Image (cartoon, rainbow, N blue to C red; front, side, top):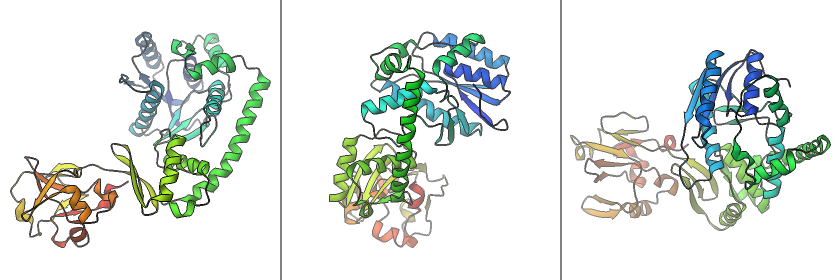
Amino acid sequence: MNLLLAKDEKYILTCSFGPDSMCLFDMLIKGHYDFMVVHVNYHLRKEEPEEVKILEKLCKENQIHLDILDVWMPSGVNEEGWAREVRYNYFSDVAIKYSIKNVLVAHNEDDLLETYLLQKRRKNAVSFYGLRESYFFKNAKIIRPFLRVKKADLRKHCDENNVPYGLDLSNFDTSYARNKIRKEIVKDMPRDKRDALLLEIKTKNEAQEKMIDRLQKFIVNREIDIKKIDSLKSEEFYMLLILYFESEKLYRSLSRKFSDELYTIVKEKSTWHYKLNKKCFLSLDYGILRIYQLKTLAYSFDSSSDLIKINKDSSLYEMIEGQSIIIRNDLRSNEIYEYKGLKKRVGRCFIDWKLPYVYRLLWPGIYNKEGKILYIPHYQKDFKNNADSLLIYNLDDLLK
């Protein structure tokens, strides 16, 4: 086993304290690589406190910086999906914090084969079969140097070199599909069958790459022009959707059912929206499909902002002068706005102003300290000519 890693680069080693990551830990030290270690303590196993102590001791002895994230799993979540999201977001955050882009993950050949067989069993639509040797996740470059090494060989290295490691007993629970594949298919798979499966993965990815090159041409300026996808079949649209989400750094599972429903919607409707999470939504506005991530605002009058400013030259300034106010962009459609003696629901104002849906999710308003709306910029008047608007703002800066 040789690490084909550049010696002049810095690395973050993701260490679970399993034999795979501990083997990589040992090889990095013996290879005199410049690296730090990160560990996620999920507090799910009784062995974890002792494993953390040993890892801390090893890092201290070898003068390796160690960063640990303590997390507790909330109830009602998919354990595997939640844990993956937590750790990869953590890896990205550490990469920013320490200005180290390279993140080493000790996935091995067994992991690659298990992932592919699981994809086949579930008939998943994916942009890549198996596991990539390297790819970018947000601000981190994920590197997997062991994808051509058997899991048994990594454990053997640890045993022969007195490298400590722990075993997660949940990995032996065959009620999980991946564990069942690991134990009953991959673990004792002979070399010729492994090579045949690896060749199958390579062939599929080569064909996949050609289709992806064609589909990526439909994503221009971070959006999809629906008029240009008439030639796509539903399964091609599904893959386009996966590629689009990945390009926007949204790593979430997309079901075929959701894709087929959206495929019908974009052909029949001109406007539509779907909330993906608290700050992100998928919007169809007159033939353009786009993911928007919103910047939320909430600041007092005496705070400064490059996004929204108070126009003190406005004739409306006397309305708020001297008051303690808050500017927010989370207006609710059922709120009541009273202006010049008229009362209207905020939602009705938006309709009358013909405010595009994409702006409704971030339109700013001025509130007093009691939470009453004092002023909402009028879209058709203030937005197009804001010389007398009380708020001066840049909507494009609120949308990512």
